[in-house]
Image (cartoon, rainbow, N blue to C red; front, side):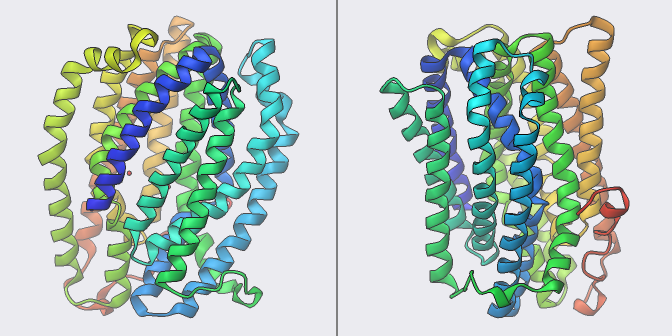
Length: 451
């Protein structure tokens, strides 16, 4: 918990430095072009198939049993699957390059920039899959603190590298280089720490296991479905802003959304260990698991209310002053309004974080998936209604749609967690339901295979 909060503080500081630097050297238009590239990278993450979260959960289960061979099988199988899916993502990005550029209605100069960097974004997406799986393995081994530290180190490297190159006169490619080096740092650090915790052999072909593949895809399928919806609504918002309000509004939306999510992350970071811990209790057959999980849940909710209310209240009151000091001459008047609305949404979503991670740890992937479906439908529907009646859309309207969607999603997750906890019986593991009781529902919903 301490490491999660500490690294999130570091991430907030890095973010506070990054946005003024990027806007100073690139401006809103060019930085908006980079954010479009980042949107493509976000879409490419669909090729992850939810396997990153599945690795964390299943490695945590095998670690609870002390089965190193089982861990090796899951990790090797996951890396094989991710390399294949990453290659598919690269082909899709290259095949749809012209359509992607046309969709965002870019100027000729920005279109040339995006076209030039898109292939590199596709290659980076494959590498990101592998790095995320290794970092998830480290978390599943019970060292989420080290996983958090490596991610923070990567973010520092990204901003330091990009800032240095921008200062030397390079363009938007500086941000791409910085992000690439950040994943290299995370990759190397994750491998070193994993080797120190458990002597795992990643490259043994014999470790690929069909049963492990099945379990990864079953659990990952539910996560993938949720990720699909979650990843679609953010690019959708950017696309609508680009087409109806101009590409320069995308950084306003980006800063308001990411800054509010970083505020949320200050609390949420301390709760990320819930999922592997619940998974560990699940696999060990610990006596009285229901009481232990309920105790963890109550502590998590107390943490949220104790720290989030004063923090969110202070930021909501002083956000115009803080944003003006932070961004300096790049400050614009529409930003505080969007930021305050996003604060409301992220606070509401924060209330469901303990319930979400508990459901994940119990294998109730279906409800996690449906929560993302609900959020996406509400978000897209609200933005669509505004455009239908007004013929345009603003950053404030999009932020309101995001906040509304987060609130409804949060209510659903908390409700389903209470239902799941009532169904758990008091006693030993013999009373636990079967693993992944409803993970297959995601496949039945049409999905092919994440706080």
